[in-house]
Structure formats: structure tokens, C-alpha cells
Amino acid sequence: MPSVLKHTACTACGHQHHFCYLGDDLTVGREYEYLCPETAKHARLRPTALAEIFRTPPQGAVMLTASSGSGLPESEPAQERLQKVLPEVSNLAAKVGGLDQLTKVVETLKETTE
Ligand SMILES: [Zn+2]
Image 1 (cartoon, protein in one colour):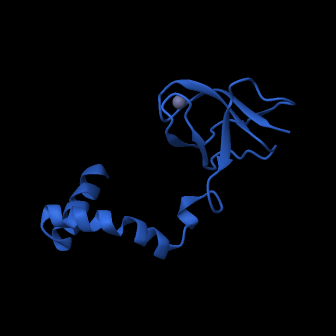
Image 2 (cartoon, protein in one colour):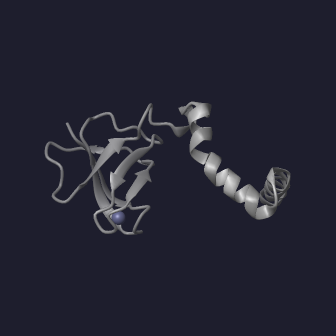
């Protein structure tokens, strides 16, 4: 039966929606994808509370789908992840004056956020 998360903050528009997942195995901490009805943007949600099981989802509930793969982006093969970010990394590197510089920037960032 559908799992429902009521009055849950939307990461895309900042408002609250009812979310509905067609399955009774909605997992806390796992990542789900949805389309925000207000901004028409794809967004991700990690439930922090257990869902309520409803026989019929509330009207206007936003459908959640399990994030692609196992649902955990960390499990994405490193190779694929690299392919996706490579153009951005190259762009960044070009902006700061090369990969070495970028590495320094990242190091500095790490130091200041730790
Ligand atoms: Zn929204």
C-alpha cells in the first residue's frame, strides 16, 4: 500500500507537500526523486520520518520514485561519476588556472570548513 509523507518540506520550492510512494517500503534516509508541482523541477528528498501507510494517497500528493540505481548516489560507479563531473571540473580548473590550482582551492576549502 502507498506510503505517505504529509506536510514535508520541499527542497525545490520550500513549501510543504504531501508525498506519496507506491510501496510500503519507503526507507528513512534513502534518496527519492520527485517533480515539484510548483516549480516543475526535479528534486530529491530523504525522508527523515517514517511514512504513514494509506489505502489511498491524499489528493495532490507528489509521487516519489526511488532514486536511480540502489538509491544511494555513493554506490554509483566511480567511472560514471567521473564522466559526469569531468566537464565541470575542467571548467573550474580553467577558471582558477589549472588543476593544481584547483586542488589548492579545494584544500583551502576543506581547511576552512573543517
Ligand atoms: Zn515544491
